[in-house]
Length: 585
Image (cartoon, rainbow, N blue to C red; front, side):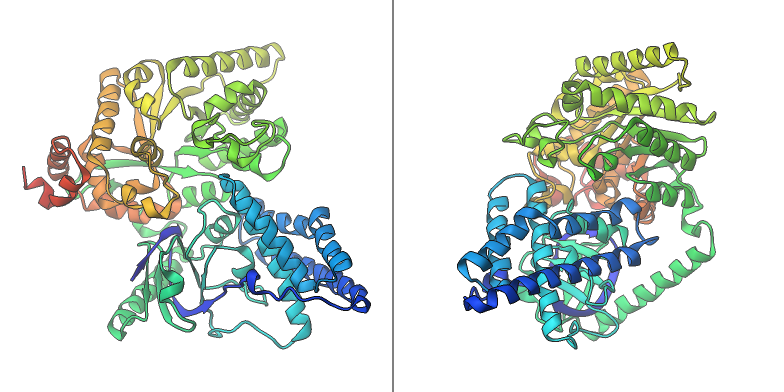
């Protein structure tokens, strides 16, 4: 059994198909002078074929994934037209008489080495995109030479096994998607990861030892909800998972027949009947639509970054207003909490950062970047205010990210007041009743929780970010995953301080993050008194299941234990927050 980091949940069973296209093994052979023109013609023919493949793929994905995600493929089309890429390949053919395949491989590998030397996750993702484009062109050349060549593997589909998650390998030559994906490396934020989630392809990345353990044709069971892959399982295990898959498919058929699945129609309750309130976390309109279909009426956190990442230019005021209007329409009169733009310099958004900082995670990010570029902040605040006015029933809240003290929060409120005054002076309609809150995710915000609770209308805790910064553990680093599998007792103490601050000032507090749905983590959160959660629509079923396994007396005793121990090992020794932990008191 291999473990990895879930990118997209789901269950897949099928044979392994390894796609390790090793560019370093491409023969860098020389060609005679008379073949140079032929190689250049082959190059341009392969570029045209690759463009047609991408156009066909965009057509196939239309209506199946969000439009914004389909546009990711435009990045690949742009690389096929990139003057630097084209000229570098052509120069190697013309000046060094290198074969076309060798020239493409050398150019891609050179770019790859440069990009991987930098710390920017975005640049590394661009290296993967460029590599994808090069491999697509090379495969077009292979197909030209062997037209009958088709992907190997089971005719009913296969589970892709590769070193990195890449768009070019997510589909076969017919552009049909794979059953599931396992990669040894990869990023949760890469373009391929975004598409995998949109297309609901069960995907695990960061699977250590994958390429050593899995051979071509091995039967695999990929359970991306649990974060595990079983290699060559015995017949008993296969039968169990086949039954689970059939049961899941039956539930999906029931869901398609119903507007709302039966499991989502009941209130979230603990094992002893305590009600828990659930809102949605969303980052695009399809997720907002899915939340509404599941009965998640409030959007407890709407991530606003997507529109800022699609194009190089800052989104226009009109496009922001239209987008926020659509989100509020989906909420149909229920609360929507818009998180202000939260981007660091690794994403190379030019109007926020001129260049990448040496340590983007501790640089100008969140509210710090917005206050350094007030025109960006003012446009977003004005768009949220005006979008709220478009619907009489709109209930709008604004959450400020990466705040370290009340001075930053006050300055955002001042700018909001100034934008309201400007809209009123211009006689433009706007929502005058917008609540302002703070996202608690940095250690300084924990220390100042009582001050924030006194000034803000509400608090939202980002559990994943809080764990990351308190424990100094990168949540995207597969080797540090253990820091997020179980909650640390010192994190429990920090959360207790926030809960106490909100109780003292009678301010509402909610909590979000992927790790909240883990049963052991849920035990502590409920024991600390948290009753309002924000959950992604795709994670709602597992979240409800985790809540239903907890009884409050046990949860309270588990918190008492966690506040007494001084290390994660001690807490784990007593059961990590389960019933056995509570009985140790």
